[in-house]
Image: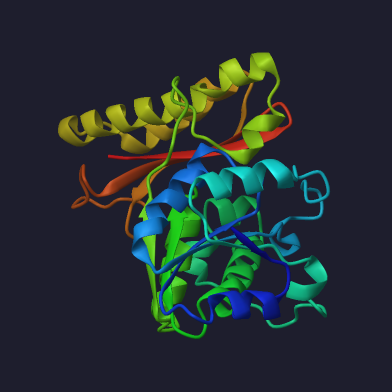
Length: 283
């Protein structure tokens, strides 16, 4: 695996290829990331991953400085998964001066759910992804693989690519889970032993919400009240939920009368102790 530390090194490494398959990450890799790399492998003529902890998507009170950096383990996992090129630029190379030009995503998609509780998050995500696309895929286009665990992020990036007519195919990777159902996440490493055992309650709450929503659709019950019940139940377990909600898969707007199973997704974000977890379940 070739490690490109600068944009010049990256361009030299990719010069012989016409269709890179790209997996952007912030490092601290787990099996979910590695599954995306393996998924990307047959989709291009060279497989590229990036590791860059993007300051622009962290709010001032969030964990940019303490976000885990696990360089040696990350490299070993990527090499074992068949990654050909790892792009790992220092911050000064990717942002040689303050990034005053930014990508502002559609507020109708980006300012709800995660965007409501983390203002500016998707501007930071869209800006760094656009820049990474320019670095890795800019000359020829290619394919980029994003995990569905970050469901709203996947939709924002997909819409960005469509609206800017980028020659890039966005491919979704399914959420990978531990044996008990907890969605794999780099932030799971913050959980203590008891918190880790409790953390599966988020995925269980989403599953229960989806099941009750289906029943509500069939029986005419108050579907919105089910979301409040789910929030109350999670709070009773000691969580601090931001949202537990059912939305349309296509645009994350509240469902209307014509939206039924097969078009919906239950999404949740909640803090357990000092760790904020997100998850979703299509149904």
